[in-house]
Amino acid sequence: MQFAASCLTLAVFLPAVHGQNDAPAGKTANPVAAPAHDFEGVWNGRLGTVGGTNINKDTAPMLPWARAKFDYNTVELKKGGSLTRDPTFHCDPTGVPRVYATGLHPFEIVQTRNRIFLFYESNHIWRTVWMDGRQLPKDPGEPLWMGTSVGRWEGDDLVIETAGFNDKTWIDAAGSPHSDALHVVERFRRVDHDNLQLEVTIEDPKAYARPWKMMGAFKLKPSWEIGEAFCVAEDQKDFEKSILNPTRRP
Amino acid sequence: MVCSPLLAHHGTPAYDLTKIISTKATVTSLEWNNPHCLLHFDAKDEKSALRHWTLEMYNPLYMTRAGWSKDTLRPGDEIEVTFHPSKNGASNGIVRIGDSKIVYRGQALSLDEDAPFLPAGRK
Image 1: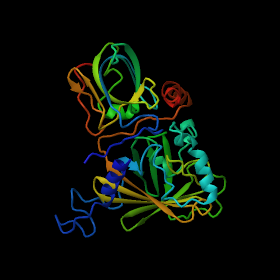
Image 2: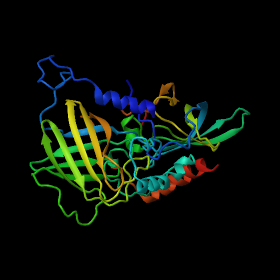
Image 3: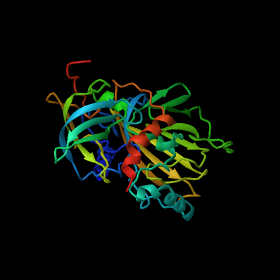
Image 4: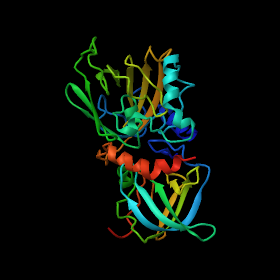
């Protein structure tokens, strides 16, 4: 886990190189500057760490309600077993931001005049991000698995705000919970032509004492296409039978 | 710098990542399944008794990007395999990028979606 974490840190905090190759100020010159306000393409990378062992309790300031839920979520993990309490194990939708961390899958960004579509290979999930200037609805209505998203450009950054979630998903594979008050801010920055970084801010006053962040890094994959990776209950049962059950016996 | 996708989506707490087994083996099947491909094989243990193993691999889309197809390995193929066994002694393990290896006909079959191998001469 440390290896993966250090890799991400490097990817995210690579210093920008200024004054070379006539790159515009504030952009990296190497290898090719990013096109402005154009994040289209297939991107592969990770948000935080993938898998069940990146316990967030030290960085995520959990309130008692969230702590109790976290302890319940991670009972199997503490025993060294696999996480069948994980909602995604039973093919529940991932929620946000976990949609970036449910497996080793790329996602695709497609931009239209007033919307951005995010297509995630993992679990075959897609999201609409409204870019027409609207605000998040004051009354979120019926809680949603993936919430409602609006976006805007802040300089060269794409900032997406999402709210209106149900409380059934996990924030990460470590079992960090959230309430229906979850508000997620995704800030995408295309650091150069081939690299996209993502800073996620988790705000949930019912679950966490203060906002906290996760970082991700993604690489452009021009030759890749998004494939079909539905979560299928029957497949999960087979996997449980052939791998999870034999390996979790004491 | 290699950014290793180290873990399966359900985590790897069941596997002993500090332990490595390397062995010659005979493939009994390659299951091209979601959420993970499975490699079944027979190998002799230290007492020359035949033991049947099931290894967890990446999902089919990842394996495809690394150069694999469901026919890359077939029943009866002789391989050398390096993997992490389960902690509890069950005949299960995991292969993953970085410290695992599957060699067939002298060729290491890539587990890296950024560095696919060329198919070993047959479809």
